[in-house]
Image (cartoon, rainbow, N blue to C red; front, side, top):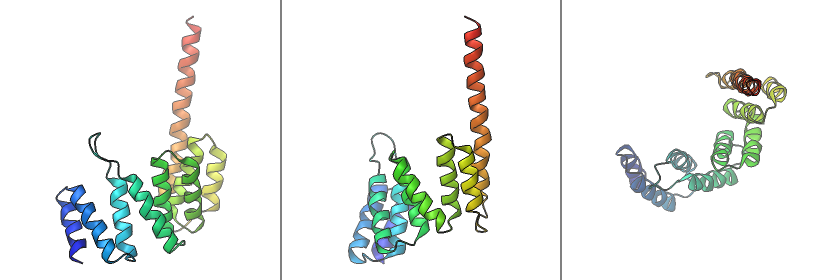
Length: 171
């Protein structure tokens, strides 16, 4: 408990390194503390400093995988594992995790699947996934926001194509 408190104090003071040392020490004492391990993984995933600092997403990956080995049905950990894979430029793994969490009812994961489809250019598939995996738990409207991205992406592509054509007509 004291090590976890030191984690939070260090984190609040902006000392990531100390916070993570205390966090890892706390898990040495209580390795099955699922909630704290999730919070530590989340903190690692969000701690990406400048070039002089370490990118801690590898440790987020490690802890999310441990969490899912402990309980494979925790869709929020699975969604965050997908986000970590995405940040590590592993889109196939990311999509697999997002899909798994979405199937379990995680609305944010559904939105993430939709985004994966959209960024790959699969607009119809994105809409179909969103429709097939609607959930009442999407209070923040993440799925609708993700689907709205299709219009933004299409507009950007239309602008790019128009610019290419305009440049060619000038030659």
